[in-house]
Length: 301
Image (cartoon, rainbow, N blue to C red; front, side, top):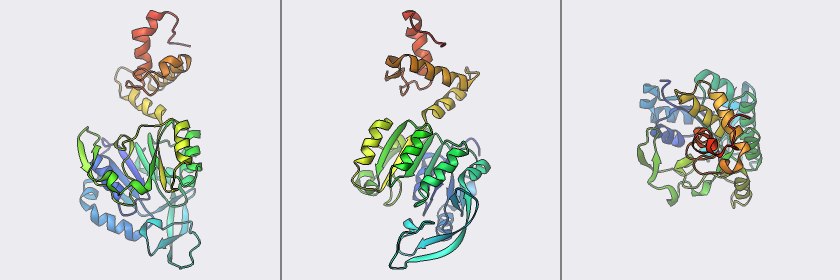
């Protein structure tokens, strides 16, 4: 079971995002506070649960373990919350729900390669707690009604971003949309209304620097948007660790970043650079192919 890369669908809702992650080939941990939605997802994905590809946890997530009142929106299953907004129509059904820290769940079930967080008002709190516990998924997506979620990602080392406008998801933008599975197979998937939509390279826009991303974020016409983020240093550590010729992955990553810092012209190169085609191996490849010949370049500081 551990051979599969792991995705966390935090705020699973009815499982539309879970379906997407399963199709891509992830093993999925689906987490939701709403017992009716968890029961529905358990029926929908009974085969995936039986095979071990999906685990569903009917709990809320927060910055501490315990029990909180959960406000189930009786008119829209997508907006149930632990943080209710003023509601003159009194459409909430209130029930106590067990709450766990996300970092504790990850300690139990494994480190995520991909983590989506959409928990209606507690996104910042959940992310902050996870980061404080030293958990940094390589790929991360979170709902961001205001800029605090984006800033939190930047502070904790995320470097590349995509801003997904929620109103586009479920529209004709992503009908029969091509997605690439972890094994490289290209498939088609129809993203449902209210789902989080395509992730990463499946989303047909380039990754943005933090400077470009914040401009797009503040100029967005709608407050309903998700911030997708890539932790480049962690991704490169995973690349180095997978290389059988690399004896010390952490040192390899630090040497690469040090080389890019010393030589900004190399750092910006589309092949050898910090975000280049060769990934973590770009810096060493540049030194081997060019740096030694130029004589002014050094591999070690």
